[in-house]
Length: 270
Image (cartoon, rainbow, N blue to C red; front, side, top):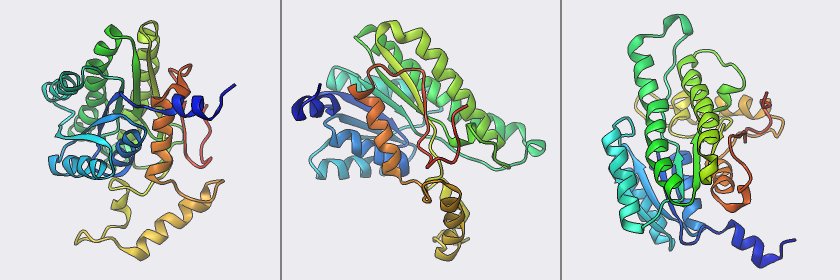
């Protein structure tokens, strides 16, 4: 039975090192901030170095420990350098969060080879590269937690985002297989499949041609999304970051190969 001190200790990430890709905005930024608030030193990777640096600076301003890094996850050499830097500077690697990703829209009959290749390169190969580099170190150094970001699109079919759903479904299967292979080394590998969350990725539905947010269109998009969910609301980046914290901490020490779906109840895990 836990008391207050023991429960806080099991949630704490004090002294641990975490990597977060896609940390420049949205779910990635919220996850990086949450892990840092729990005590981890967080290496924030993002395709745009300035946004990664901005996230890290915000974390440090709140008393956390963070480093911002430009990172193209589709480049294995950059991924390896990112992982190696964290290990070299802190002497350890405990958590790796694959949150960077991209989305495109097309019907199955209209998918182009170029679109398929790009989405596979980022959403699947990028996550694989990070998982490989982090997983090898963790397997040789007492374990760790790898957290991959999928989507509710893998649970409930949605038109026009077939390539995105396909790559995320492949990521789920990669997670399950890897969890079996590295479990004996103390490495846990899990997937999170968020429901609809207003982020930079989803804002394309309510962004005007000049790049500004269309408030009326945003309400038109979010209102039915919220109504569709049993909880009657859309998610927030922090909702998903809390799931990341659970899988990163010792709260989930007996959890691996699983799909956690914080989606307001819009789709069950089959």
